[in-house]
Image 1 (cartoon, one colour):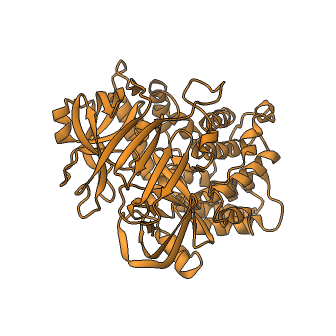
Image 2 (cartoon, helix red, strand yellow):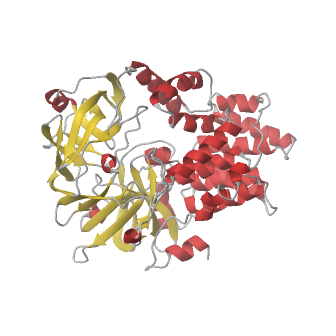
Image 3 (tube, one colour):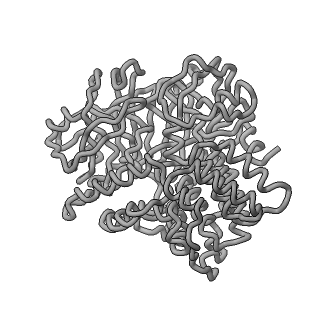
Length: 536
């Protein structure tokens, strides 16, 4: 039995991302001390040019033709797999790579390609082991360092992620993916010229990514250089408890949401909690608040610049803008000078907006569903010597030894889940979603026991499919097992795109309603206290 299954199958064991600490110990073992040469790329081939232009189907065909002439062209093989992945043809990419690897010992660059594929398939634990093996063979491969950086960031090891990414960029500053990831870590003032240079040439982005980058550039140009959001914590109470209520009408026909009272610019408002709301803005000091335009006027929030705001759930994008809030208070916790998004929309319920909870990442967040209250408690102090730049690596304090390690992508909370005691997957924790659901791919795999390319979702529909259900499903996560008669499916491709790995489903209110959920955003830790009287 694979090691990950052996661990996940232990019902009493701590279900956790199987991320070996030795991978991050590479730096201590001298990885960064190795003398590595900067990569100098030859002129792009015809296939490379098609790939950079975003014509991935053409690129895949051209790479295939190049391989037919010379099967030993590793770069062409990697380019073909990447082209298939860009088309969301993940199963085809896996088949190509399997045939490419065969039974021989793979070269380090092919090992890294396998790790990239494993991550995209929603198997970060496998990607970690593969990346570690590749790094031991070639510690100077920038793509390997980039993969390690991505995995580290998912695992709340932000200091390590920053080091690996910086080294990858130093060694290969022209790799488009590495360059884009590095660019996103820069302060706003430095990001602007880098983004201008990035969008000036084709970089292998699809049409949606190109549009996003150009919009980011427009937004940064509209930001006054002397007005930068910082969203600083202005008060540090020992602990705060806030009651929450159930509100309906945030999404038409949707479930009730949990909402708390907050104060923005000294005005009280009701904010629904949505852990799946992921405001990916190209500016610093983002609060994670999305406020209705009608409420924003009452709060005195003035537009800084206009933008299209992604819709909530399956809704289309709406007009809106970015504004700065002088103050945001929740209970006795107060923040100053924070960026908020404003959306031109209407909710039928008594709610003024939503909040993702990342604003409270300096606190242990507890959502107590049975008691209808939130608690915000101080997190354990980080070990001595932790940098003061806000970048730290996951720290599991002794008092939190019974917590489960989870993945984070922006504000998204992603948990390893064992489905039917045999399918290790990753699920998104979504407090705004009523049902617990499966992706169409996961539902089909559970129902038929195998993956089939015709069930790959390559476009986002954003709708629950009640016609296709998987029955007799059990989900095991964080020392908890829940059984369901049947689960519907929902297109999770939007969240797969955001996180870079296949999201097999959502843990919605159906799974959470009898729970007390403890979330440590800083360290990527979570714990569920279950009310067995009401658990499924």
